[in-house]
Amino acid sequence: MSYNPFDRGSFPVGVRTLTMRDDARGSRELTVEVWYPAAASFRGRDLDEAGGDAYTIAPGMPEMRQHAVRDAGAAAGRFALVVHCHGANGDRRDKTFLCTHLASHGYVVASPDFPGDTIADMVRDQQAGTGRRSTMSIDELANYRPADAAFVIEQMLDGVEPELAGRIDAGQVGACGHSYGGWTSLALNSVSRRPRATFAMAPLWGSRSPIPQLRRVGPRLRLDDWGRPVPSFLLAAELDNCVMLDDLRELAVLLPKPSRFAVMPRAGHMHFVDHAEVAHELLRSMWSSPNFPDPENDGPALARAARPFNELMPEAHAQEIVRALCLAHMDAHLKDSAGARAFLAGDLAATFSARGIAIEAATPQLV
View 1 (tube, one colour):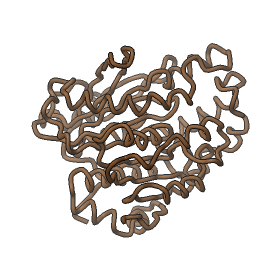
View 2 (cartoon, rainbow, N blue to C red):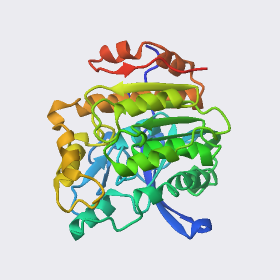
View 3 (tube, one colour):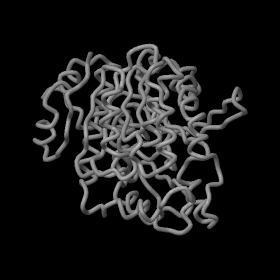
């Protein structure tokens, strides 16, 4: 296969952390992680554990590393932009396996922390022992998240990061996200005309979820006011105990065309993030805790419905699916890659099966 979305790209990867202040909306401050193609002199350093970037996502949590060089010089050229949206109680760096992959293939990826909706906020609330959320509710955040993502896009195009100024193609903008971030990446199309492709993973949507907030937020996603075709790819997890597969099958039919839909067998809600096994088991433990900061949810029932990770798809398989499909979708619709279009139009189940990975790919809705 001449087109190969599985392997890391030819660019070394740099990473920077920016602060963006939206004075038009009450000086709302966003911390944004940006991955980008780095200069050739950094080749290999991003993959070297000693040269890669180390970070901690919340107090008391272990140090993590990513395959990127902190503040590396940027490569010359013009690059597509993808805004990444983390899930509820997530983190801007919760999918470095995907964001660094995209950057290695010539993308600038900007990922904001959504204020009041990070894992650091959730850990702090659980440690407080009140059993309540101290920040905005998930319902309220629906008013902010899409606008936050749109603001980040405009800031990146306006040159908020001087070294990347002029290197981002305003005609090549996409969005991706998981869970509440999947919802955000789709809802973004209602508030910004910039995105030309959306890759949504297990977005909050549907009436069957055991989570009341999800059932309320889902209907706020509009699909009738995008104002232009935005090719979308919807990726679901078969054994997701938060976002129900049958609901996403219905959403896949309702999405504006063109759209694609695929399912990761034996995968759960946390198979889309870094260190999926750790995240999955941590969330099961937090749901079981009497201090879980969300009295509206039946945490113990959610914990029981989430199977032990050793019964689920291996993390490496899920990461390979997410990396390949997201990159191919962006390449096809942002970079007009014939190879990417052919890859997506082929027998995806057979392609992944040849790599020892199971996937269900539905017939795309193209017209």
